[in-house]
Length: 284
Image 1 (cartoon, helix red, strand yellow):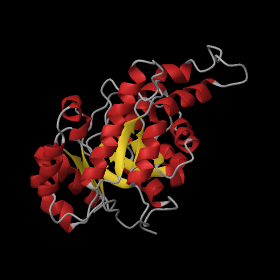
Image 2 (spheres, rainbow, N blue to C red):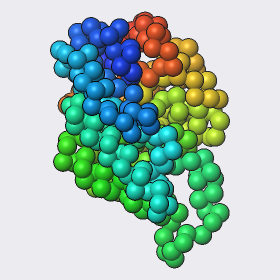
Image 3 (cartoon, one colour):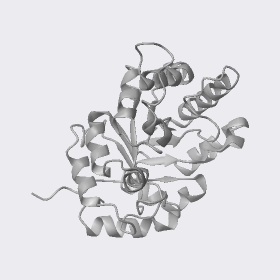
């Protein structure tokens, strides 16, 4: 039986919103505003930027999210001087979501390639603990208060794979908060890079493992070597397997289905991406 095409949107900076505004509104598509990872914006008066986004999106009724901080803001920092600054940065992200009416904020995974290959190479600091449980504890030290604030504002933090090799790690991290406001994000190109370069499972396995925890997907193609952010169809991801895995999620087609957004290096490639995905009968 053929799959029904899945509606997808885009991750855009404010600069590109006017170009795709009608497409987003007419299709009731998901949108992620990407400007809010910029340190200068987060540290300044961001209210004017928020006002401009709201004006540009007048009439938009789709689901809205933002990309949160990540430059020099590791969510697993345990440095007593740096950690409060990083927490404050993410608190600002939640405040921006509340001001925009956004319901999601993307944060980057703390799990590095080194962590995966050295998880049993160094003993945990506390007897009886695992390296992963200690790693998760560090993340709670940074994001614990942020999650509580996100719950109050109706914002969900979605943890995006970056170098992740084991897709279970982020799911277990999200579940450790025991909060509906912390869930999993997948970047298809990051997963494909990890699959090709470091032996991670293929992209559809990331989707299957995330299951009901999956709340957000960055759709981009790659070659299994680097983080390309090409339009789907320009790389080597097996898109039929990815969309089949998405279609099999228990919450697909419901209000809690994952936000699905094209995250391309060049926003002008959205047309090519949609031509390919529509031609394959995968998306609309």
